Image 1 (tube, rainbow, N blue to C red):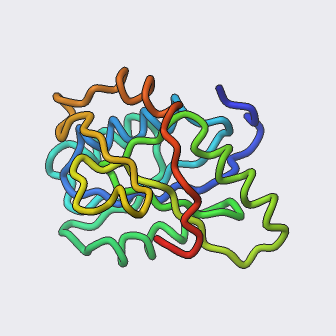
Image 2: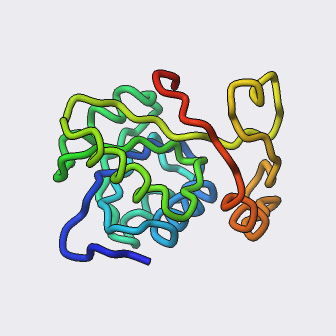
Length: 168
């Protein structure tokens, strides 16, 4: 599905803290569902669950701290590895749906300037009044073992999500 294989378009920053199975799913979704090539950068907080070994085996560029330094410091450390014009933040428990990056890049091109912050839409398993502001509500599983990827990939094409400009 990758259109551009010469150089990465986005630098995707992912902080993680002993959440290896979720991180594997997140990275796989980026690799499988992206329209362009990207650089994936991971900050490993602790990593005693095998995360450090896994990113090394996969050749993923990363930073590491012996303990949990939190999201902000992790992202600041990863910033030193960024080689693209665009930075994208992912939590390690996020899943990238097909065409996610093309939608972002199309919006970036339409803006015509570099002063922007874009946010994606997340699908939430519980409503908590989210439907009223256009957040899709659907439960595709709450663990890697429960995750119903095929249903998500089938359903996401028909999700109609309004543009909530100014909302994150």
